[in-house]
Amino acid sequence: MNPVRPSTSQDAPPTGDPAKGIYFIAVSQFGLAFSFNCIMSFMPFYILNVSGYGEKETMLWIGMIMGATSMIAALAAPFWGSLTTRIRPKLLFQGGIFCNGVIFFIMGFVESLPLLLTLRLIQGAVGGVSTIGLVLITVSAPKDRLPKYLSLFQNSMTAGQLIGPPLGAYAVTLFGYHSPFIIALVVVFFSLVYCRSHVRDIPVQPKSPRQGNPLTGGILWGWGLTIVGTIHLMFLPSILPQVLGDFQLMEQAAITTAGTIMMAYMATAIVGNYLLVSFASRWGLVRLITIACLSAAALQVLLYFSTGVYSFTLIRVLQTGMIAAVIPLVISTFAGEGGGGTTLGFLNSGRFVGNALGPMMSTTILAHFGLLTLYLTIAGLTVAILMAFLASRRM
Image 1 (cartoon, rainbow, N blue to C red):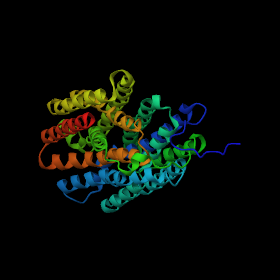
Image 2 (cartoon, rainbow, N blue to C red):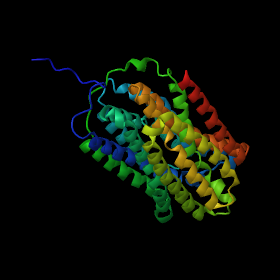
Image 3 (cartoon, helix red, strand yellow):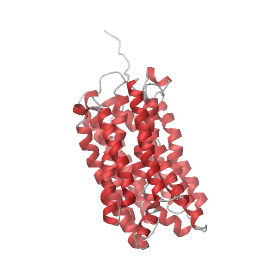
Image 4 (tube, helix red, strand yellow):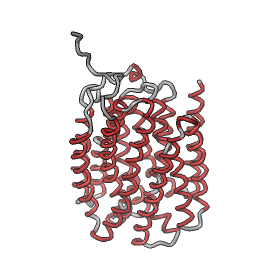
């Protein structure tokens, strides 16, 4: 009798339909993304409401509080990926979801800006759970369908970003500022139940030969593109009070409009992601990344020339429809070349860096320079990193 060989990440995916388990990973990730974004749509207004600081100082607090979690999570994401070599990924996935739920509940009863910032920093330390989701999918999915399933994972997070903001905004207007935190806790609880009951377990993952040096083969510039793509998606909420104020909207109308705008552009992000990824086998990953980045950069500049809420929203939805696919396309590029958990964690950390830089960059530049400088900075950064990425792929 032949000895039983331990499972590895290079083995064939588990028998049965791999899509079933992957769909439930996406459902669990949707719940976590929903909870984060349920509170993000009104967080700038909440901070303005409780702040005892001046306008400029408060704007900087908004940037730090909204970006703090993601900055710490960016540092923790590769570590979470490396933990899969010692701890079962599903157990890590469940633990991360649970810890985030507890912190959401506590945040709902905090009105001190320093304490709120502290909680966001703690949340960032346990916030790299999406890296574990990527590992679960990469091991479970057939390689020829990996871009499709990574796109599904991206769309699950985008769907949470789509549905969370309007529900959070409407909950604030109906029941007050504490209610969205309770909603977030309930959604996280059900996400944990789905994960425990339906997500398929996989063995502890051995180290990939590429994990020792994650910056080789253009991965550094791929990481840069995940940062840029996330900045495009996440820079706007922190400055929506100022943008909508320029359109003469008062506080309650601005809160509702902010949720609606975020819902609209996240919806087109889902559609654009799905459509672009569906062309991956015919057009190639790198070509699609180039088209998406250049289009999004041009539309970013056009935002400055919008004349009202409707034109601003139209340009914004086109922009997010193009940029959303960049993240799964970049991750698919390197996951298909044999990147291990640490490499995936490094690439995924770009999401968190972008989540942090988006609000921090937008509030800081707007406070000191203005909207045109902000839009030109994001567009220029997009083109520069894209050119570096393309050059690295030709080497």
